Length: 315
Image (cartoon, rainbow, N blue to C red; front, side, top):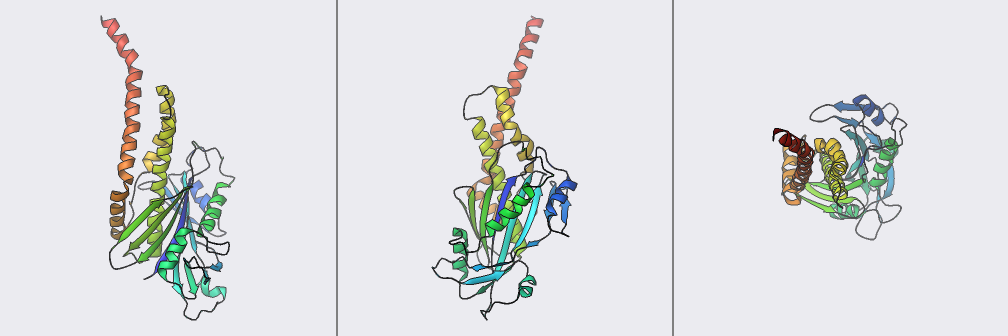
């Protein structure tokens, strides 16, 4: 059963406003001769062409032994709504029965593939990768994604003045293609790290990577909105100040909540099951309702002096 692994980094673009479509395309065309594609529905979205990185390192195994892997993981950059930037890198393992290192032309002809030059089970590879790099010589797809995202954030086209504070998140994932029972295990870790272990009937590695990027995006939206709400309600504040602190969530985050919009039927079913167990949509809905309730209170308080004044005049 093929095993695909990846890591997605998600962050707020370092710009005071959402960038327009043409700027988004320019930002994501960081590879010489590369290009970016865009769409407008159901939300403005831009994504880069495939970026390949050559790696020759140790496999991420649970056992304390070294197995060499060589290949070209694929990175994609995307920009949602003009202000949420993501960099995701993924690769599918293949076992080379010869165990011999081949010329780079061989690996470049198989983009997004890592060949395993030795004995290693899929279970060991998946668990070892989700645990993170054990040594400096171990595979580190997160470092590849981080470099790509940082390259965008350093662009001179950005004013480096984001509209609110937020934290970067990382989703490290493994996906095993299986005709049997489908399942997904999502875990929240420390320092913005999340892990996802997936078993699905989806054979397309890019579709799996897109699903994980969408999950990473909506986890970031929820986590960031919760941080904004927690800071706003950390102490008693005048209503205008409280609404001002909540406004970034209203302007930038709430419109971007569109989970599993472009997923296949297979992966859409996995999202529904995962969402039911993890409660992403439920927590999002309750948080948005809390914000709207506060806006209603603010509106009532703002209208109260006017209502009292009209009542006095009629009396």
